[in-house]
Length: 262
Image 1 (tube, helix red, strand yellow):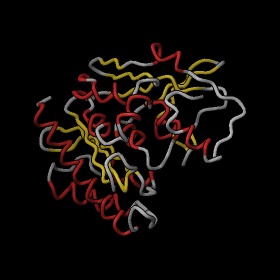
Image 2: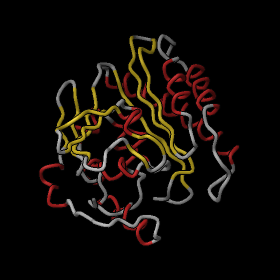
Image 3: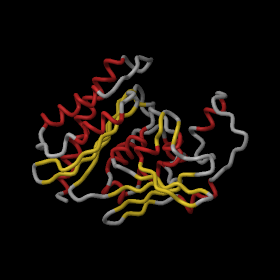
Image 4: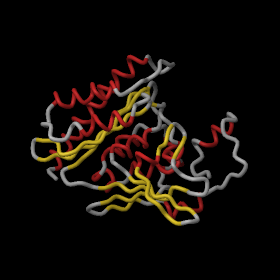
């Protein structure tokens, strides 16, 4: 299936992908392009474009991590055509919105001949370029639970504006007074052990809201990574970024909760 085409078409040009059939689903843009919010849930259609995610004020209010990420995704051409569903289904380890959805504990709604099923984001992304969708299913919606006293943030380091991430981090926090009630983390482009990162996030619960706690979580998150040296940076540098960006996003998320007073 092709929507924006900014992931699949380059792979076809490089002969990495060679589909026998190609189905253009852009006629579904009206049906599957939307952002709907209510007090407990955000629903986003899989055909929602990056530009629509960037411009949505209700989404920015409930999940500011989306605007953080969309501001640093590619360029206007990609943002005008690329979609949330396309990004998630590509499952590129250096892709931003997978990390955003992991931090937000999103649920993916798949539809096929036998009906619909919900797939937690932790199960949806099976590995690099691989998802839990079967051959006759498509992603139609992403659902994000909203929690009181919560907010989120995303931070990214790139070599050039619009480039793939050297490293990036996302965080979501729920506060209870001066303590952390719950936390979620995501990391991009650093070959993270997602189970180990989930343990780091779980360990935030009950901790005080302090820079020391956030820095410790950042160090532990970096230990859950096994990045490789490449043209974008050394493994040591990427691990350093994982720690710093995790710390930074946790701090920003906490500041946003307190600023909103929700």
